[in-house]
Length: 264
Image 1 (spheres, rainbow, N blue to C red):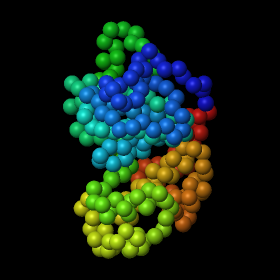
Image 2 (image 1 turned 120 degrees about the vertical axis):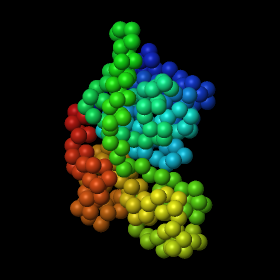
Image 3 (image 1 turned 90 degrees about the vertical axis):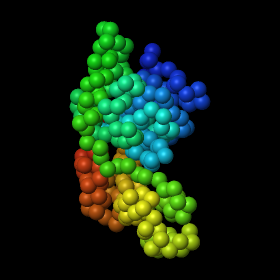
Image 4 (image 1 turned 90 degrees about the horizontal axis):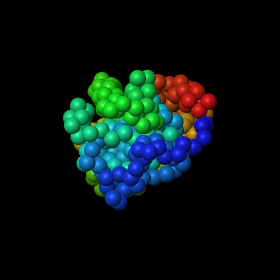
């Protein structure tokens, strides 16, 4: 791991006085949490090493080193960092925000996009207008980038919130929806309906994505694929590998190997 980077000259305080979100590039320690805040501009957050999660009213997006999160202007959002994270933050001017989605999300990072993000956050502008031209390349790449299914929506209904709180506290919990319903005082049928109407997915799908989020944290922190599968509630590594590949788009072994390569 390279030595901690000192904040660059572009590393400043945000436009929201109560927030503490940095600009530019810095190493962020494990467990650091930036409270909810918003910006008048759009914002991209990328982890060149490590991982983080961005949370908005629409839910949570987890972003390891092959993902970048996007937050449009005006959306309250917070960040939590996992492992020692080389975080890059890039403001998107309002006049370019219309080229991207009008809601928060997470996108795959192509090799070209990665190099552009690093260049824009590693060095001062070397020619007038150079950063703006490179920024339009970033926007073009994002407009074509796939949006992986790693979004974890959060419920509005109190009964559903009680159930998801139990699962957040213990993602490996194997309780059925009926058993969880008895704990919070709601029927299985009611909760199943709420998962579909409030969150747009089944209970099984939501819990799987939650477990994948925690699996990404464990893998980022160096845990083995087998240990991660057991800790996150899968009965065997094969079922974990299948679920992980379906949602993340690559096997946990490949993801783990990429992290080791970046650290070395």
